[in-house]
Length: 147
Image 1 (cartoon, rainbow, N blue to C red):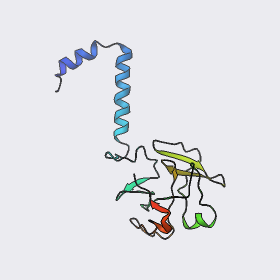
Image 2: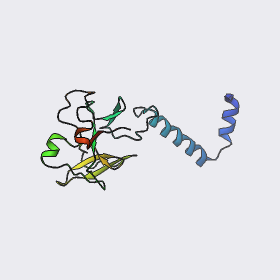
Image 3: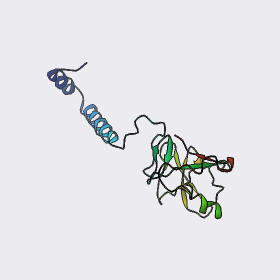
Image 4: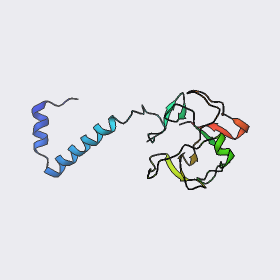
């Protein structure tokens, strides 16, 4: 139901200054949020700029599939050394803050890594192009990260 212009103006005029400021602030926040990459209702929730969704999987900025590792526990990566060469972690820039379902964990070497719902995120070295999922179900412990 649309309000006529005179009615809307009269309604705003009757509001207190703090109420008008609150409404204006809400409008600014809503307009800012509407331009934030549009998740289109995805359940991936408040993604960091380094993560996208494509084909039902989480991907890095280049469109490469992201994976989780069953041996990771308690928000800690169990994939270090040679494992991290084959499964490069999705690194978080220094000073990065958690957002929504995404957290930042500290790896054994002190570097920061993105995690989704507490599970650290990785790429697979043998995935060469966007859409590749060569690491899915690898050794029954690596799985495509899905929103």
